[in-house]
Image (tube, rainbow, N blue to C red; front, top):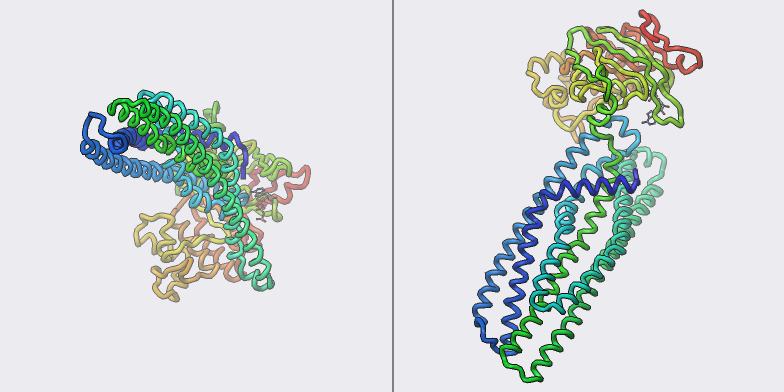
Length: 588
Ligand SMILES: Nc1ncnc2c1ncn2[C@@H]1O[C@H](COP(=O)(O)OP(=O)(O)OP(=O)(O)O)[C@@H](O)[C@H]1O
């Protein structure tokens, strides 16, 4: 996970900017609420002064009470309006971020899962983004209101009682200093808490997936102890977050109590002096009212500062999410634009779908996952003409899956170009590229749902006839009579289980429905017995008709698919070029 503070700060600042527009109604409600609080304090001060010191000669207590009631209702309404607007701002931001995160995860594809744990990605898309609600609903408005409302209150108080207003302002200024100190601790504590939570989630998911291995190797107690240790770490870090939050809130209370005491001493002294001097009742009542007014304003003055301190947690969550978001692949426009900049030839026209497949060319492609470990593909060139099949062979780690991920657009060459139908895939919009490709991997993913829904996943608007054609072509009709509800049998998680070969037939049916000109097969029979493998290859052979096919395999049974063979193992020996055998050599 990236811990680059500049990236985190830039992300948090950018999110703040984006959240500000939606936070404006919350800020407006907060400002108006601050004004009504001033009105309430004035009414309360008038009522208390007339009770404590005697009538000052102005309006009666009844008028002030009525005004107080009206202001209380108004303030209640403003609070509701502010809460509704804040909830809306949080909802909109979470929706936007979740869409961005999901798009980035899908863009990253399998390559992303190789470097990030699926539990981490799930935690980001679900928990972290959920936790950002407070950032947009509370922190963004609070970061404006903590200056605006106390500033407004201090100015109005200064018009009435300048000395007390100055005391309140000076005590208020101590708060940001304390918050700056606690804030750093809060941000670190919160980030550590999130890391501990993600670690616990990842460990738990791993262990649930590997439950059979844990039981068979008799490691249940060990694993339970480790999970307990991870849970305990999360508990400790959560307690630390709470401790820092408590200290931060206590520091504001201290500043507020200091302001109250100093104002009582200051204004109380004035009222007492007037009383001793035998001042007239209206003058005494006026002085007491002004003193009480400022005193009653003190909690209102500190309330936005307390709001900011509470929302600091939310900002810390945003900083934690920032590092996780920064690890996701950037938007498609950025790399594509960067790669095609100044190269009009690369701003590709989208190849048309053709009946006989599509041409695929690798031109001098070099790629390293990690430059320190050297290039996986070095100056690789080959060409597959429309309708032809290329079989990628070579030992484990020679780069077969890397080639397939590159064609899928999940990774881009460090040097060289990959052309599909004459268009550089770096310049193709992701949707256009995926429209040209069907992909079948080692283990097809079946979603919880019916068999029909799983097949239709490739083309939800397919007609019943098209689905039945795909079912027959993929030989699903051979095992369908054994399913309780035929095509409407529920499969996937919690549903009916399919064997590896049957699941692969669902993937073949999906490819039939999608009907793309380029078919990528990444070890499609890796986990199947020889008889099922032969069966699957027979279906794939039919599927390959009229399509360009790239097949990565270790299996000798792949000979069932007639086509050229590119031995990547031979390329790893110095001085040897790509070796395409059996068919016209289009390799360089
Ligand atoms: N996400 C990744 N990050 C870093 N290195 C990677 C990543 N994916 C693959 N590699 C490395 O790239 C090399 C080629 O891997 P690749 O999966 O393409 O090989 P392969 O020929 O498909 O292997 P296999 O036959 O076992 O599937 C390997 O050394 C592998 O460790």
